[in-house]
Image (cartoon, rainbow, N blue to C red; front, side, top):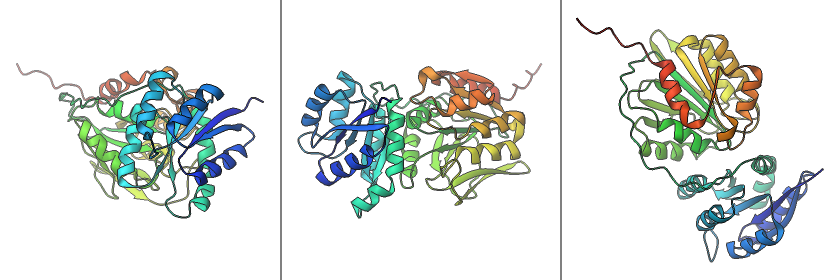
Length: 349
């Protein structure tokens, strides 16, 4: 079996050793080297030709973002960022994803050794997923307010689900929505503490409003509700009013929030008044929920393989027959608007 070659880049000798040990313990991975700064990392990349790089954010001589930009511009490789959970580093992490990083792992703030071991399964899974990714250099898209479309579909709801590569995919879809678009509910596999910053970042670049969801929030046109990290989100319909339920609970498909929880609630509560899209991500979360949505009359779409960072979740949904349409990322927003649009009223004589 060919093992995935990994290069660990971190200025902390402890983190380099911890990551080397836990990644090297997996039979599918081989840590071919470690570097304490980007200059050493560049030399090792040329010498060792790794398949995946784990990259710290704050390092001496050159910061991780600068190095990432240079790497993606000269020799694109799958990169998994390692970031501490702070407000400032949330923005740094999202900037890294905009520059082309595949995913990120939260570096524990306290008891680094025990904390890193506790998330070993997550780190290994994300490195393996990154090895299957198709990295491309990217820059942050400029704000693109969409024009109003006159959809007036107050009873319709759009549900989106994503995982690996989902930050940029969701941004691409949401920046394509006008300020009067149907209400949107979103689940992305993201840890607690990051979703609030991510929602705020999207809110600055989208014509629709974007916020982290709170239990009981109403789903209304022109507003996107993002499930908070570590909490499931579902929709509840009462008469003409749709609200979200945000609650703890056991992980579903190893995730909390889980896309399946949201999609299944849309199937049960909204039926044909919903539209669902499953975007890039590893695993199969959301595939069965999207199938339930389609069976209850909802319109469903999956992102195509060519535009996915990781063609996992959409692939599983397509295999189940859950997606009535398979489209490149750049066409999904327009498709969702079209299938949720109310017919225009007849012109007056």
